[in-house]
Image (cartoon, rainbow, N blue to C red; front, side, top):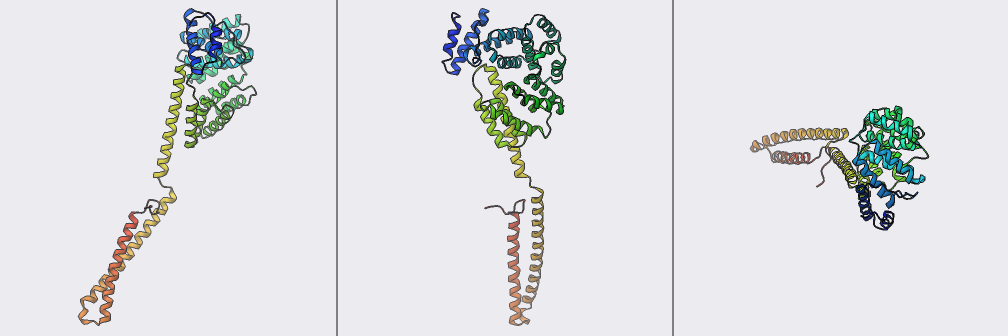
Length: 395
């Protein structure tokens, strides 16, 4: 794509469907990379999700993938500070820094590299926004790699955090503290940071995401399932089209055993997941959602299997009583039949010596014995067709 007038090309791209717009932005971003040109346009207050913001994001994504270091993050922070409108700057900072951290999480800056960059920032940066962007980028990698103790150390004691001191009470930073505390098992600290970040009037989408991620990643106790379910439900209420929040709600519902509702939530998350932006990020998130769906289906199947095959203690007791009653009935019937057979047979054997009424009594005894044997056969069949709860099966 020629670079004669990239702004005009981006304005034209805004009139295209989202996928076509993204393809146009990708081509322009790659052209900028190939020519060694930095985007020269500004991103207005409402421009983060327009072509000017999308293309700049794709450009800096490629820069970070090529050189995944805090030095690249600093250059990006300088561009955001100069080119992005102040009203959009915070949202762009959080989205880009944390997003680039996730896709470059396999390369974490060493302590010496971090110290060198921080020293340069302290002496040359005109604003704490620059170290703040770099802090989010570095902490985002630690979060993605679940290195909780190092994350706490960077947030509490690193020179980078000191240089970004003006931002260290931001909800997203507090949310990162909650995330790290959840992973270390310090529930008291985690819940305190969670409530602080969650109830902050300037709470951002990134802060909500990190809070839910921390609850999800925690060393689970019985309270974490309901906590994740309730907080994710609140997040979905304020961000109804956010696929990630619906996925967290699905996980929370799964943890409390509400598998039907969890399946509805994860299916909605998959429908909401936009097939746009960087394909690698989209595919990775889709794989995560599909794995969550597999967990829900497996849990649902297992729960149904257990509830359908293993009777309750009350059911076992009822079945035992039923079988005992059948056993007693069989004993009584067999005894009566034996007596009737013996008595009736004896009377018939001596039929020539007995009067007609006595011979009739003998014949009646044998008939009664035969009837009882038939009853015994029916009782046996009844017992064999009775389920484990003592209830007869439906035909």
